[in-house]
Length: 156
Image (cartoon, rainbow, N blue to C red; front, side):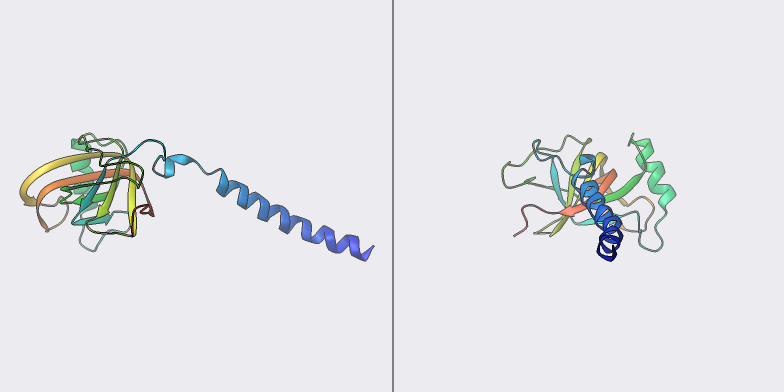
């Protein structure tokens, strides 16, 4: 009897472990770049995580600028001076960024992490201040929403 009770106590722990593993295995794929369709990737001088913005960032100004450009959703990543097209992964070449839609943002160079954004809009600003900051920028600024951080599949 003691042996049966001991096994019964372990069952809820094992069931919870299996449930957690199953939920991770069947997580929605919208949170990651699709493996079968190459997504445009851009190397940027900087990528700002607006979920944890740098001090002094005017999030409302960034939201207004993104909304004016037609970004679906609330921006949660900002790519600064994103001029360098990059490969999405090892299987596909460079895919040109059409100025909107799904995008992968990376810091220029061999970044270990990247930001996959389900939606994006961009503005090819000349020399101007980055919206919501006092940072001058020259070049393409990308506003992303529905973004998640993930490993860069082509990082060496």
